[in-house]
Amino acid sequence: MGYQLLSDTVVLLDHKAAVDKIYSNYKFYDDSVVSASLKSQLFRIVSPYDRKNTVSDDVGQDVNRRRSKKKKVVEVFDETTEKVRSNHSEFLKLSNLPAPTEECDNRTALEFVDGFNRDDRYDRSKTYNGANNTQFVVLAEFASQSFLIPPNCRFFNSEVSNLANLLAPDDRFDFVVLDPPWWNKYIRRTKAVNSKISYQMLDNNSIGNIPLGDYVHENTIVA
Image (cartoon, rainbow, N blue to C red; front, side, top):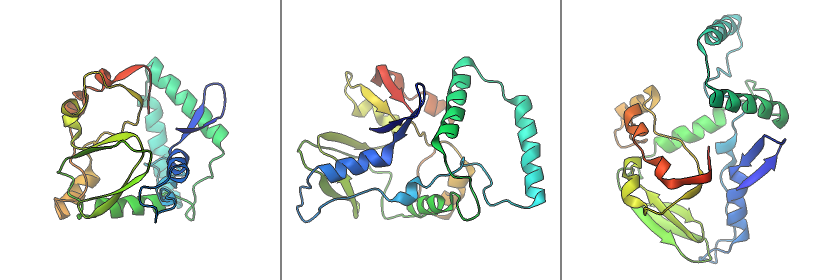
């Protein structure tokens, strides 16, 4: 995993840099492919997702101020959450991220993800499992789409509720990126247009029942 040490307590994990390094340092099984990289649009996130980046009028600013005041009253954090919140604030100060503007916001990334979610060529209800045991990057075809499989890895494309059926009892992860399929209005609206697109949502109880704790060790990083 690519990373940048910002301070004694803050480390910036750079997913794009790590993946790009794999696809540029290893040879491809198909020698007609020289290198590959993740689309930069997907990582153009310059402000929190729920921030109204394009609101610039006085009314919008007043609404944001009222929301901020309300949050200050109701937000009470436990010790662990407060520590994470403090480290995140330190990260924002050290990372020198550009201030969001109408010309520099999350729109590019959101449009990219929206296009991906609306693509119904890929049947997300099917399960694809496999492994690449070679020293090469493999270009594979599933459901009429191309996928890059890194060297020396296993992969699972399945409902997260099937996790226990896909992993061995002694499997442990060093690094876990946790992005559960929360129940939300946007996905419900998207699926109302076409039931085949986007992901299947899970309620909080179903997400809480995922046995993630069975597949981590004492030094596992969960992000």
